[in-house]
Image (cartoon, rainbow, N blue to C red; front, side, top):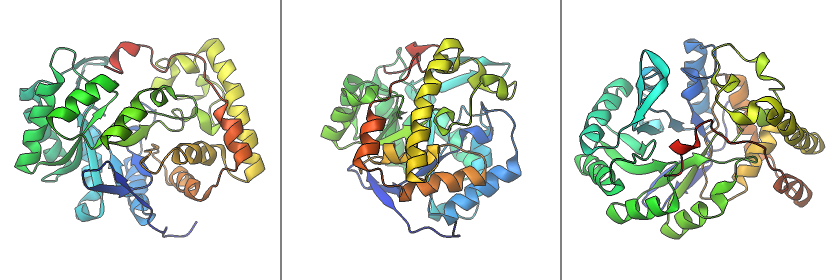
Length: 330
């Protein structure tokens, strides 16, 4: 692959934010997916910028906190080259990785942004998401506090993650929401029924996370026994467990068949499908290695013909996407 890539951008929402067509999810560089190599992670971020992937996604809960620190080191001196997104609202117990709470209170909004700015080494973020909707705080109060951050210049645009249509409407009535980040891929398509029509009506952009099904759609995971002992995919995702996994491997086989016919990789086909769903979409596939980043960027050149789209549109997954679905779509 060449050292540069023609920049492809997308207007994310109708408020003025433009980002690279493909983003980079940085979570796995620090948390959840097994072994970590900071040198390779930073090299991956630098390579992303070379390839025109300038939309970087992190969150304060990744680590917790260590991913923002890593991203901050990687972008030092290059702030003007990137569109930087981070998230707040999920609070983790440092002593127990599985224990967490949700806080969308106005006081915590103010506290969280200061911590993120310090760790990232910047004076503002381009896009600030509420990571999960707090059931104990009216969304109007949370978004009102986020809007104050825009006025103060600490945040340029605000977003939500995993919010249902009604919540999005209520939030947008307080302050324009620029982007919604929610899981979306060939095997996670529930947003198509109500959420995508709602955000398109309101002029809100869409940022799909896990567009590769947490790596499963790449064909690289045939058994969770192959994963590191501390990889969350071994136990946190019902679709990768027991009979569900066996059934879902048939989905991967069909993606692999399309990829073989088109001369692409399964990952590229899965990403190309997401990209084909609209020019208001900026997926953020995560990776911690340059070779996979380069493969993902190759998806921008994959054209899915009518036969491929028909084949892929018929895929469905078995099992919930989270062990605890109560934390999403609120």
